[in-house]
Amino acid sequence: EAQVTQNPRYLITVTGKKLTVTCSQNMNHEYMSWYRQDPGLGLRQIYYSMNVEVTDKGDVPEGYKVSRKEKRNFPLILESPSPNQTSLYFCASTAVDTGELFFGEGSRLTVL
Amino acid sequence: RKEVEQDPGPFNVPEGATVAFNCTYSNSASQSFFWYRQDCRKEPKLLMSVYSSGNEDGRFTAQLNRASQYISLLIRDSKLSDSATYLCVVNPVDSSYKLIFGSGTRLLVRP
Image 1 (cartoon, rainbow over the protein chains, first blue to last red):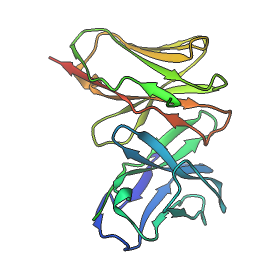
Image 2: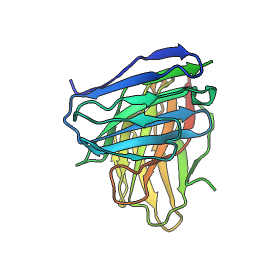
Image 3: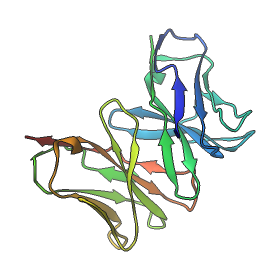
């Protein structure tokens, strides 16, 4: 089954405690991205990756890092989380032929 | 002005009703358009792409009006299971990685 898997699904943490949200896809897609979703603001792109070792900033990259060492994995790193990073995060991979995004189930992060 | 704007709703309609949503976009050079559906607390999923000639998939019809810079989604014979948030998505350039999402329109279908 084609899928994008993110972990953890839910996390409560404290300001400054580094955390990583993992993302893995089994569709051999080259293009992957991270979004955050906040009420009234829609989905906003944080970072994207066009292939292994190729990453670039999206619209709201501040406070986040990513890496793409393997095609299937695209982790999102919050080095020093702050309360304004409390949000619902989605990882997605793109089928380039159709442009369709396949989303993970989401990771709800709360930073106290 | 937001790049992609949608009426947040909610649109509250009875089963069997026809309902339509519009979405406006600001970049006249936008290349491709999509409607995604998002259930409460779930991930968005592609509902349909929107082509210049318009397209239909069962009870769902999507249309593009480039002159007025909006896309529309028409749902006929609404079902309870259609209750969800519908996201308008625009690709402002011919690239897979730069999609702009609207904030979504919420639809509630009541018995």
